[in-house]
Amino acid sequence: MTLAPPLLDLFGEPLRVPTRRERQRVATRRSGPAPRAPGVPRALPLPLLPLLRLSTEPPAPEPPAELPGGMPLQPTLAALLERHPGLWRGQALGHSRARCWPSGHALLDAELPGGGWPTRSLTELLVGPQPGHVEWRLLAPALPRLLQGGRRLLLIDPPHEPHPQGLAAWGLGAGDCLWVQAREPAQRQWALEQALRADADELGAILAWLQTPRPALLRRLQTLAAGCRAPVFICHAAAGAALHSAAPLRLRVLPGPHWAQLRVELLKRRGPPLDEPLWLHAPPPTLRAVLPIPQASALVRARQLEAAG
Image (cartoon, rainbow, N blue to C red; front, top):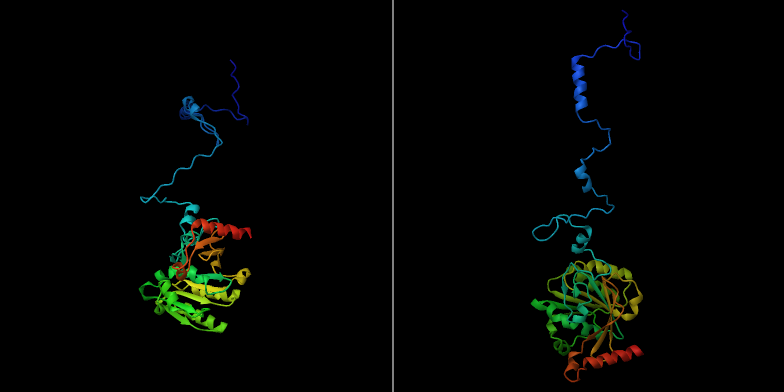
């Protein structure tokens, strides 16, 4: 009887019989799940396959959680910009962090940032053809409210001497005004700068008449006006409208085609440009009692005649 040759492995060594422990280990591997290669997803049962949907659209964002007051926990950048008082969009009317006083003209307040005359800022009025007339008709309706509590109006070198009866017609008294007479341009500038630096509690408003100021002077006045709690108005000839100005608010004020009208052009403001002028109904109080006030239709016709040339 011949014996069968032994089984050899690849290296020519005789194969040994596997032990019992090795046979149990192989049996356990065969009964378990098949091994998966790395990166290959696990196969899902057939009932779950119809639930998978392939879509190229991004998932809808979840609404942010809100606080009890309605403010989101994580507001967007646009929401932060809308609420920030120091930022504004160019296509919208700007907001004012400082206090604004109503001008007494509802049509003008609707176009002014903050809804009135600003404080801690410089307002430039370009008046014509002669200073000393239209600026009073524009500013006088707001002055009684600004001078409440014993405050006074500071007048720096007005073109005409303040008249007590004319002031009384606007609801102002002679004791409500402080008149600084300074004929030299350097004296006017010095008086105005000292008033802005002082920021006295007794001042309700500052109204100064200057010759066509240079851009450097307006920058310095705007810096000083940022620390003044009273509205500051600079008046000069309308011929200086082409010059650069650091004043955030610039208006050109001219008499209208009728004695009861004012033509106001907003040359500069924190907001979109206003192409059309504003026509304000501002009759002088001294003429209101002796001359008939025209109706709105008459004012519209006068405006149309002026536009026609």
